[in-house]
Amino acid sequence: MKQICIVMVLALTVSVIGVGFSAGVKIHGHFEPFAAVNFDTWLLGFQVKTGVIFDKDSIVLVPGLYLYKDLASWRVHGGTEMLFHLGEMEGLLLARAGASYGFSTDFGRLLIGAELGFPVNLPGEFFVDTSLKIVPTFLVQLQF
Image (tube, rainbow, N blue to C red):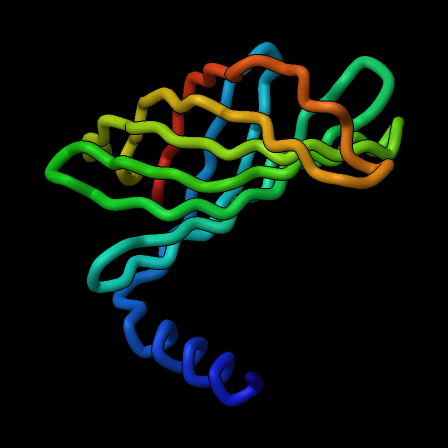
């Protein structure tokens, strides 16, 4: 198993053709500023992001992992985010899918889009009951 993991990491490292950085904001009932690192490969790109939501009584950390594909000016993406509410010590997993339209600026590529979040039930006392509905989100992201 260890050798398989090493081979997978080496294959992914060799296939990376570009690394970029992003900053943006998501709006879904709260403002969530985030920062991300983008890794472009020959076929797909993936993004590791972390965001923060400043709640009234606490802070919510929002790490996420996304796969994306750029098709002309459009970016189609999907992935997961975990919301960690530090005040109440609870977590929520969201599966997300969306699309963005991107265009070049003097600073980098600006992406404007939307995504839908689907709550996922996970066992354990740490995770909240996901009686929530689908979470629509507006997204603005600047990729350097």
